[in-house]
Amino acid sequence: MAEARLFHWEYQAPPVPLETIRIDGGRPLRGEVRISGSKNAALKLLAAATLTGERCRFTNVPEIADVALMAEVLRDLGVVVDHPEPSVYEVSAGDVDWLFVPLEAAAKMRASFILLGPLLARFGRVIISNPGGDRIGRRPVDLHVEAMEALGATVGYRNGYYFAQAPGRLRGGDVVFPHVTVMGTENAMLAATLADGHTTIRPAAREPEVDDLISFLQDMGAEVQRTAPDVIEVEGRRRLRGATHDTVADRIEAGTFAVAAAITGGEVTLKGAPSAHLGAFLDVLGAVGVELAGDSDRITVKGAPLGSGAYTATHVETAAYPGLATDLQPPTAVLLTQARGQSHVHETIYEDRLEWLTDLRSMGARLKVEDAHHATISGPAPLHGSEVTMGDLRAGASLILAALAAQGPSTISGVHHVRRGYEDIERKLLDLGAGIEPEPGP
Ligand code: EPU
Image 1 (cartoon, rainbow, N blue to C red):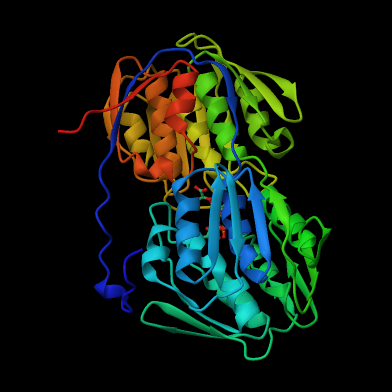
Image 2 (cartoon, rainbow, N blue to C red):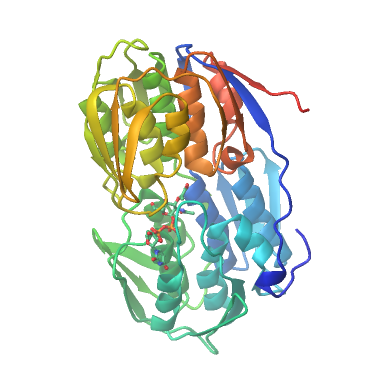
């Protein structure tokens, strides 16, 4: 990682090579794909390992750029992070000597802010960069900071950095959020595991990745429980021990591949898909008319032939879990381009997550972005290949989906965005019969 500079205004993001892929669309995808471990669980599990000096071992960790970056951020702190074999990480935070998370880490990955809670709780202080906003909205961290203050920390803000302190020990308290926040819940919970006394967090996020983190913390000896659907209670401990954990499967990756099958008129079995975590999304697929079969860890998605107009328009609205995941809204929008009638998309979590729909329109979709939170999509509209650039992770994956369903070739640049969160996406699509190849450089 580049040497840390203190001032945010001095920072210039290093240039990222603009990798491009070419997709020849219109081929039905067929076969089986194995769903990887969840990005949004793995990042928090790795951070949680800093709560103890003992060794922690994680399996089913996705091989994605964000995980590699989290490992690098931890190593910069003095944490030993081993990667003995694919999908396995071992973390030993016995000698943490540098309680500073620089802008270089935060600018690349908002999830680096999850280190606030565990480092503060274990070492009593941390300086951590404000991750700022990104392409899908402002995404402030005020609720994380307020949660630390509710646990007795003092947090100052200077030059883009939070200076958090809790001399002695954090103390248990009531953390009350004005609305659900996933990482806010996780940061509060991680901090509370080592605080003095009892903490109640409400409304606590109900996402399956939060429960995966709870089960790891329990194995570390933490006294943490979900005592009601949206309440988490923690009785702080003086120290935690090392533990091993198998990362929960990635429901967002599963949903993305489900749309790939549906939109190309193919038939794909998602092996290891966490069906129980996909309820709201599978309901949308059902309402649209996508054929589904399977059991608890296997879903077979059978699409209607491309251009048959067999799908039906519907209304979708994103919400905190157990509602429809905002991260599956972009893939769902691609599917709705092929549904007969007018569909409505209501994005309730982020204010900029519909902007990418203009790229989808350039591929032939008939849609209108009404305002920051609402869009209408009319279908079925045949998609055609185009030259497009990814702007973020989920929109990037959705451009790939649109290109798979489009007639003719597409070139998509900015592929580093999907590498952040989808393990081996090109190989997995190739194995299902997609026409996808790297575009030779200039
Ligand atoms: N918010 C605040 N203040 C805060 C924290 C959040 O106003 O201090 C707002 C956000 O701006 C947003 C809403 O609260 O409007 C909910 O955000 P949340 O805190 O739940 O999001 P997050 O924890 O930062 C995680 C995932 C996101 C996913 C959201 C919602 C990780 C690393 N990221 O973000 O995943 O969209 O929950 O489910 O867990 C992705 O994987 O592509 C991704 C963006």
